Image (tube, rainbow, N blue to C red; front, side, top):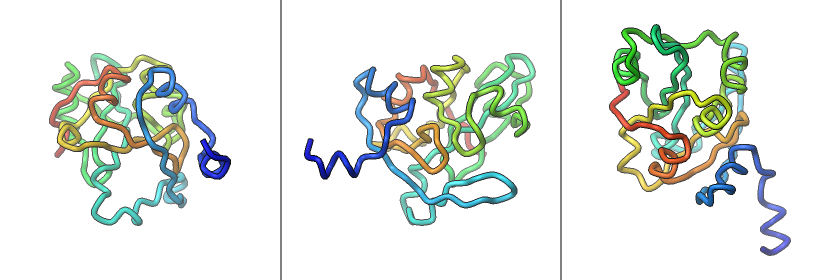
Length: 167
């Protein structure tokens, strides 16, 4: 790799190192961030018509199983009823923000299905909308940083299950 190309690469996150260990192809992406309602958030406005390819990782609490993770496009809403049914719960609700870092190891805006699965083995549920895309983006574990990878590779690395999770 040329020195110029290496200098342009971002330092690797734990998630990227996990993908490297499993020989899974990905590409890095960095987005500007802003603060809204007291938490840092990624600004995806630069994506225009490609925003549906960026997926958010939402950690919920199932009434029977405890924490479960739903991964849906940032342009859509997670259906708690569908996630509950898919995860063998009667009811799911978003995990309170103050419990998020203790449960996943990540702050709001940095939750990543890959890191959460590898650190805590929480069940990961992926919206089936990603199955038809050649690649999707998920957080790489740092606010403003994402990785693009093939949906099947994401499913494999985090032992995820595809299903309809959208409202």
